[in-house]
Length: 234
Image (spheres, rainbow, N blue to C red):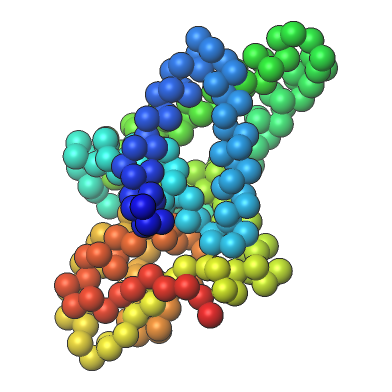
């Protein structure tokens, strides 16, 4: 089984983890502890490939793409949702609330219910993207939530750090383009981008070096001229 095949299976089925953690965690709080290895993986992967997790491995991303997309009107994401003020403001709010909640249970370290309480906090945090993400997906666009997802912001920050440290030079994946004279300027690549970036720029500028790119490859798959590819940096 190739890496691509594994990735496609994860993209197709990882959404199953969302109800298991978000709903099952209300009855068995320790299911929320599964989010710790997920967060560690997201941050570690971010150092080398940016928001690759978001576009290929994220359970919520899989839920939005596989389950919500058929029922979404696919409207253009409102500017307020794309605003950096919302993105960074929500990130500060989310991390602040998370820190306060974790701080509230630290004193129970060593007690029998510590892991249950900590797991329940993680479940509550997981409910937020589940409820808000599904709602936005059903009234606007499947991945509207991803424009200001706090974990996506963490991955982006990790990516920026990885670039400064030189970790991404040979491991990063970038949308690359060629033959601008052949481009039909149909805009299909831009319209297929779930975060409404402009991958068509890669045709004229050789690469799309945007830290917000989730490496989902939808733009490369939807270019009728096959001018876009996802290639390793360097």
